[in-house]
Length: 275
Image: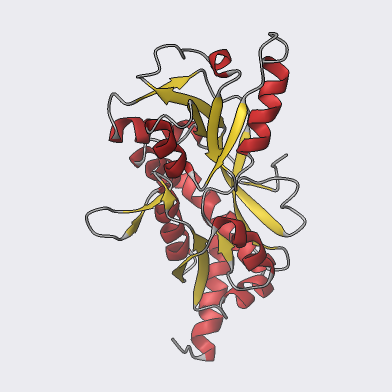
């Protein structure tokens, strides 16, 4: 949509006053009619496609749409492979990642992360595995997880610190194409357990009742962030300000509660706080 100079200036002024960032940054953000956002919809309840309609939905989707509304910009969702997202931000193919991505030190030199959620990896298995009832019962067994995440390294670190200390064999980490693939392998008996984000387990257990059982609690701490190109300061400040306002007026918590993810809510929006 083309805008007149007057409408651009007016929108920029209102945005600056509402969001609290500089007039120069607001003017820069007004040049974008849309924000291209990367998402891979295979991680319910954060992002997935409604089986009945095929439409995008989930917590991240709702947060993204609300941010677009507050910045007066259309959100143009782009389905991109998870492993390609950081590079897509760096090369300006997209403007932002909103796909349950963990903010890590390794990713921060390439993208700036506006952090909006806390979670951690958690072990679980099927109720049919009556011999597996605690985390240590997985020592020496096969545990699947998405190979594109930080989970494989975190499983190995936990195994070294706990299985080894207990005189037990190490966990065998099996890389999967994603959590759905790992669950399929678990149900087929090809692996003995799975690790995925603790925030997603209640949804999966409710969806497939009497199928899975969690083992312990999350065994590591993670920060989930929205990745933005490091030089796109207008968008970084705009997203941070929109999220801050959403926390203040209760919209943020309302969206998280809708998806049963309120336990990982943040009270302050931070930048690059991942380890």
